[in-house]
Length: 192
Image (cartoon, rainbow, N blue to C red; front, top):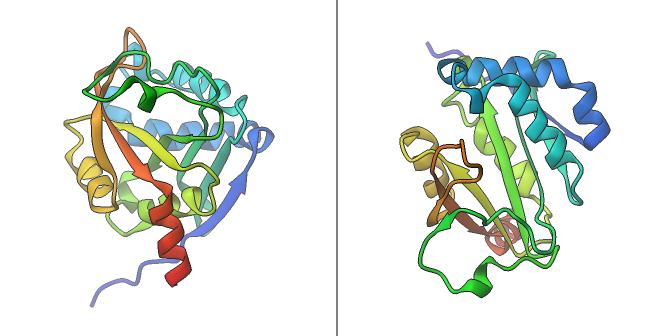
């Protein structure tokens, strides 16, 4: 007999809400990234500094997922501003205009994580869909480590396309850059 998958309760948060949840967000982060915490780029304090920077941008949104009052995962992102530095370090064969931002074109998904004990139950997809639902931008982008096969496979199965590679900071790994047409999400929602 299989145990039923408990329902995930989703909540939207703005920047002040993110700051209120700091201890819980960091607990999930350290649980998900436990094997990488020795690398200074993945240190919890450095991670929190990145989150604080993301939360300052327009269009910032955080979606948290809860089971029985326990935070088990979350996702967040923001709208890339005009002349964004997001594409600095991009490696790929695209026209330069594709990398230009006007403050309305692209939503950057900067995090999507679920605690290991709750993975492979569809919760990441629920968080993903909740974050992207109703976004006004035309497209979304995210970065995934090429060796993170489960996440990369999931994103590609959800309609994301490989766009190139990107090293967002000098001390960061090189990530696969993925792109998602948000009209796909709108089409799915209109059918449901």
